[in-house]
Length: 315
Image (cartoon, rainbow, N blue to C red; front, top):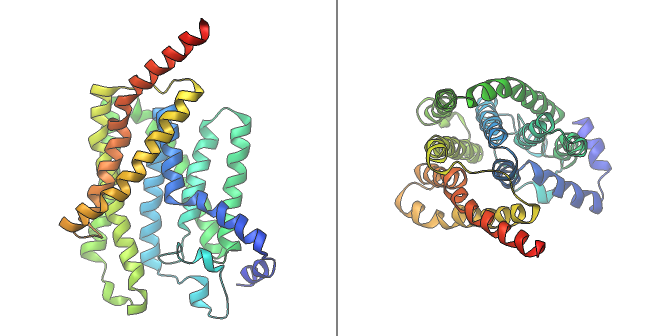
């Protein structure tokens, strides 16, 4: 706590705003945006690697949170104050840091797969800044952050060679994704059937709900990958190549549709199924299928648009 108190003494309104912005790069929406950009515009294989690193890291992160049940710094020590704007997003238990896991997993993966020095430099800086922001904001301890940082590096180190080898064959990628689905299903079963929420005081039940929601989200997303992958490989088989202007256009339109799906599917699915479980799994499953095999169908239209623009330029 001494280190967090030292950082708290350095806080200023300007630094607060800066690190509140930086910390969002370790959130869910940043992960979705970066993953789809890589998958749609850079490399499908590296897009799968990002997804797998993110999913595996999240499963491990959520399992450790609910197993160790370490309270957030301001809850464990009422005399300590976190930056108030950061508290609403700091759901669940403290150890380990989810934002650190997500950011280092994401930017660390891009660091080892990119050949461009400026991209690698930016990723390296963000792998430091985002974890630091969690401590500056007072929502995580150094233990939470450094464990997640090194664990994310471990996940990348193990996953990259396995995914690259599996991706080269249809059978291999399905076996790999199937193994990931088993891991996700195991965590879901653990949350539903094995973990006893009665061990938690009523004041901490929101942490159990957070982990339960995430278990269904992860399983649903992986189910979406398993459904979408054979459809994309057999019927779509899109190319990631394109001019910079069509790449930007297809990403902006695609991300807008993803946001609409994530929010628009909530009301009908929550009306039919449990808000925290089945509805969440179906929602993320549908969104991932859209990302992998649905939206890429339109890439042929973007290619035609690009050809028309280039033809006009050449006249």
